[in-house]
Amino acid sequence: MDLETFWRLVGEIRDLAETRDAADDEALANCVVDVIADRLTADEILAFGAVAGDLAGLADLPAMEAAMFLIEGYISDDSFMDFREGLILLGREPFEAAIADPDSLAEHLQTAPVKGSADGPVGRVPIAFESITSCVADAWLRVTGTEDDDEFWNAAQAFEQCSVVPARPSSGEPPILHDADATRARLPRLLERFAQRFEPRATAPLLATAEAAPEAERATLFDYQSGLADGRAASAAAGLSNKHFVPGWGRPFWEMGHDDDS
Image (cartoon, rainbow, N blue to C red; front, side, top):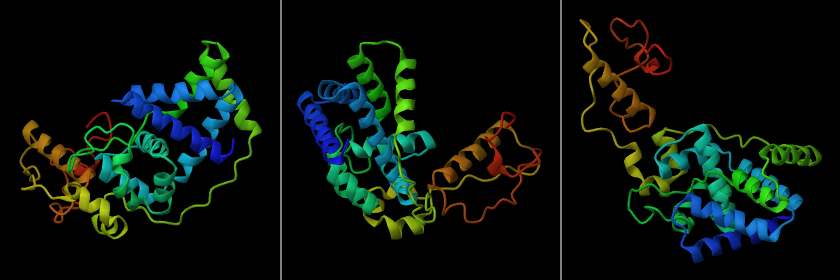
């Protein structure tokens, strides 16, 4: 499947979503399935999914991670994949502009098919979409008339093995996720729009005292760690480091929450 055909179909998906006034991911997913199932053969549907996967891979950039954190307010491996697939459904122009410069997403937030809280000054903008692959599977099952998911995955795997996808070179960019200074330099427009992601808390929670670590103090430390993890308490935590130990637990407080015994 060539890119012109792919992006034409994405345009039809967007038009259908607007006609139906898609209000959530489920409604948007129905639009994706309906368009590709009505327009494509079973093999073409597999090709559509392969192109979508390749394009999502192009968006696997350090600056795009930071852009997602600013726009969505959180990030994980799975959600970043959903975000990159959601970028595709913004349409060709916003997608290609974002690959060249992730900060350009500041100009395209209103093009998300599902508007959600995009009109709010600091609200979450729902770009992430879960997921084009599921839509491809549903469309393929509809066109082939089968209800066996395994048949789709076997067909998709066979199709992938017959396809030759060139290796993508690394962008060479260093990670900037949760780095306020690097984000400000790389994504100035997005950071201006979502400045609250890096605002310090009004007061920084204190470490537990040396005498004990009761539940209330333990909860405070978890709260502090959560703040550090999403970048909002970065400036407030300037005086803390890995050398701060939690009394009675024998390990740095930043390790809490990463094992079953914490």
